[in-house]
Image (cartoon, rainbow, N blue to C red; front, side):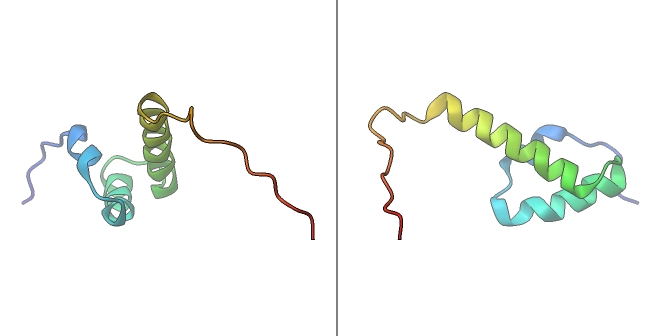
Amino acid sequence: MPDAHFDIRSCQVLPAPQQPEMALRLSKAIGRTPESWLAMQDAHDLWAARKSVNLQRVGKLKLAVA
């Protein structure tokens, strides 16, 4: 019988290729759709990036119309 204890913090250290697999497991174990778990992870990752990435030296590209 699997251990019934679950620590949500363990989900935050998964490399990207394993996230869909974990989303499927969370969906079965806790509920909600796998897509909702992936969306929550993406939202968290974007939030963390906004806090740590310096965009001051990034300029806007000017694209030519063909």
